[in-house]
Image 1 (cartoon, rainbow, N blue to C red):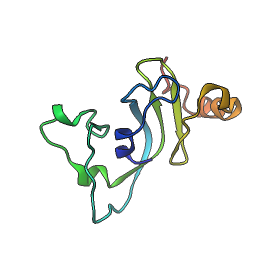
Image 2: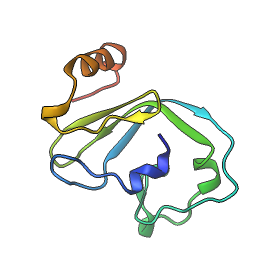
Image 3: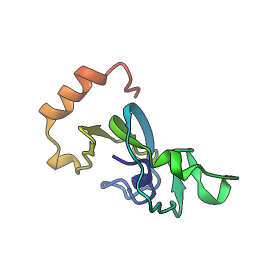
Length: 112
């Protein structure tokens, strides 16, 4: 997952924005030549664009988040990021087995 995706992601249950991103593993990648700046929220710097003095978009684009979690500050739900992909499904569509596998690996980092 790219940091910049947090600029467009909202909770699928309550529609709250922005979600809080916690990164457990990331890797360095070659950033593209064209860089699109975030419009509302920068999860790399953890703030709304209007409140940040400056951003480092080039550095942000040089990372890929392979493992982490997205949290909703409104309803308290969490969504795992595994294998570079955010798993943002409504409660009735979530795979409890996958959630348990994620928690068995990262549970010490996942605080209620």
